[in-house]
Image 1 (cartoon, one colour):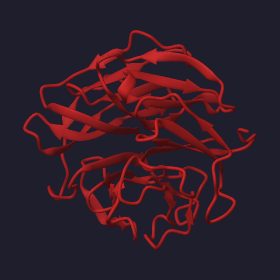
Image 2: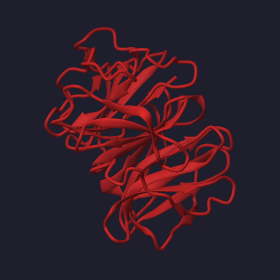
Image 3: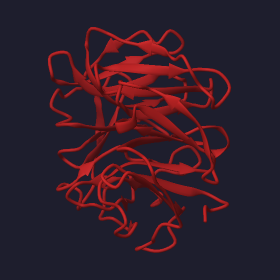
Image 4: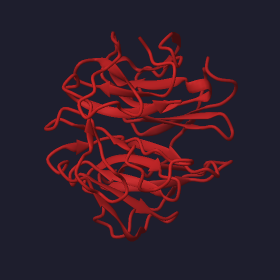
Length: 279
């Protein structure tokens, strides 16, 4: 049964499923209260108006859409593009989807959520576009690899979304891109190799003291973490990150201090690669 209140959605790439939990998690070893099946390599997740959840179904070339109570809504076609990450700009009602295959961004506009015919954003500097996130001012930030195969970071300012490759400072900040999120104060970028979440400014520069090492996650691939922001104060333990592969289960870390995990979501997941909270 889907929770009436806040719910945590975790996509499992290997099991072709999404697990749904009550949020905040009620215990250190919480189990799913609902499961969505029939997906094909699900990865990124983001939340739209009314608690609608978008899931990038990368193996199926589509974005799946679910209401807060788990009802399937019309699927958004993204055939051949291998959608990986997604982000929703609530200020202007725009859904952004990163497409790994070929490197592009699909931008959907209009009333949620029966989208079609996106604006496709490409750039010669794009190699592979992995994850992305909006700032409150509607500027879009994207991580991935550039056309030379190097880790990079792009800024697409609202409203024109002109692509500017800004990279990272220091240049070796990210070993392998692991996610882009707004934490209520800064954009953060995840590193799958190091198990870190890093605060960066609008130019991609690491903020002083801005690296949070997720203790116990260094052997995992931290992918597309969810960071509670806005009304949730920095330091509140109700923060989620979804490590995969070696760890196999999503865990909750007390961001921003980077201590050991305080909660885990049990053993249902095999390769979690995305997290979102539907209010």
